[in-house]
Amino acid sequence: MGTNKEEKNQYNKASRTVSSAKNMAFAVVGQISKELLAFIVRTVFIRMLAVEYLGVNGLFTNILSFLSLAEMGIGSALVFAMYKPMADHDELKLQQLMSVYKAAYRIVGTVVFTIGFALTPFLDFFIKDKPDLPNLVLIYILYVINTGSTYFFAYKGSIFNADQRAYVVTNNTTLFNLIQSIARVIILITTKNFIAYLTISILVIYIQNFNISRLADKQYPFIKKKPETKLPAAEVKQLLGNIGALTVHRIGAVVLHSSDNIIISKFIGLVVVGLYSNYSMIVNAVSVTFDMVFNAFTTSVGNLCAREPAEKIYRVFNALLLLNIWIISFCVISLYNLLNPFIEIWLGSRFLLSNSFVLALVFSLYMQQSIKVCDMFRTASGLFKQYIFFPVAQCIVNVGVSVFLAHRLGLEGVFIGTAVAIITTRFWVTPEVFFKLKLKMPVYNYYIKYGIFTVVGIVAFIATKFMVSLNPYTGIIGLLISLICCCVVPNLIFLLVFFKSDEFSYIFGLVKQMIKKKK
Image 1 (tube, rainbow, N blue to C red):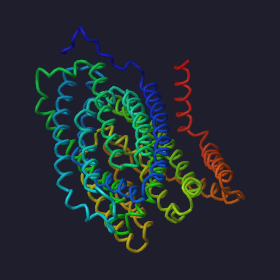
Image 2: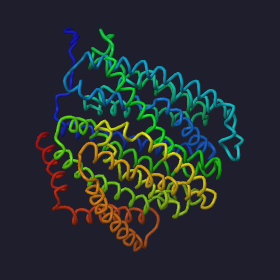
Image 3: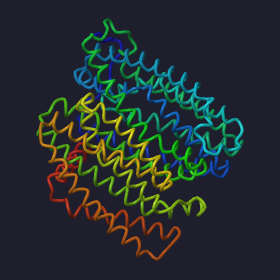
Image 4: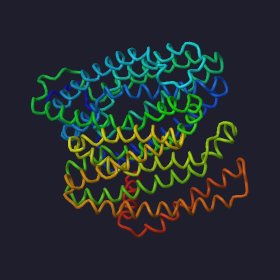
């Protein structure tokens, strides 16, 4: 199938369980190091630059997240299309798909540059009170360059994901994030120049993407060759259909995650964007770490859904659903009780926002992440077209309710709007699609499980809040005592309730299997 005998292709030979464990371990380590470095960089940033630069960073990052809509779900559709040929070592098919990927991402990069630069004259529209910062247009242009350039090399990393070796991409990202963070701190301390800070970031990310491209060529040398034949028309049609459906889904995801700072900047103010950015850095760190833990299962779940019967898929689904609700409940409980005490110790009371805002923020996070496993199984099953209209509805509800409530409730209203958008769309549509079309089972099975797991999470939330309220200490000692409460109380409650359940037994069995294989 077009293999070059002089170059050895190094496919992944590990099992799904081992691959998931390896991907998850490196993902967690990489994310922890990333967030520790981000915390250090943010601390230096606040000390060296005006708070308005925090707002600019948050606003421009969110504006350019909308430009990523040009990607249209191409990456997800192509990785899904690569699962089977990768499992079968069908190199011709992989060559054809990577060739499509390359051409598509070059177009995407060009579109991002074009639209990004075209938006330059309209920057004032997004800012309620424009700050007196020099070179604001140049700063925006550097953000555009940083975003658009990633599409010209990074696409090759997808072949590692299809081969259940996401850890290769993770480790590459971790290495260059360390280099970037060190360079940023040096630049901030020596120059206090935001433009130099952005320029060094662009350079490091370019080298990072070039390196993952080089590693992909080395591990799978056949992808460097032009395929002897093009992808069959029927497969192109199916691929375009999936991309079209994913485009709509991506619109919903981008609006959900990237509209907050724009709405805050437009209706509340850029300084509040800066204050919120300190909270969002921590919450996003938790959210991304959570995503990476479960994304480590994605390729294995794709393999499972492609090869196994519905009964086995359902059993694994329930086990991962328990893990999903357990972990996100622990995260939400910890964030609610620890965020403001931590911000006060780290930056001081003038950077604090209200407890009601923190509650709205973590409620929004719970609604986004508690359906993570259901969404992962739906995507891994290739159910894209059946979901096509609901992300649009999510966008409309999210922006409409967030803007409406921002006028009446302020900052809290923005995040309540996000939660409402999820509850009225994805929360019930995602399981409906997966259970009816893939499992062929009644969807009430899901809601019963979800309801039980969530009620236990609420009990854990109330119990932990009560225990933390008994803490008489403040400062670092008080924070550490509250942290211990957050680690012990919710996890102990979940363990006591579920340790005899089938879901917990399955998870515990997987852990034992991983330990035995490592020995």
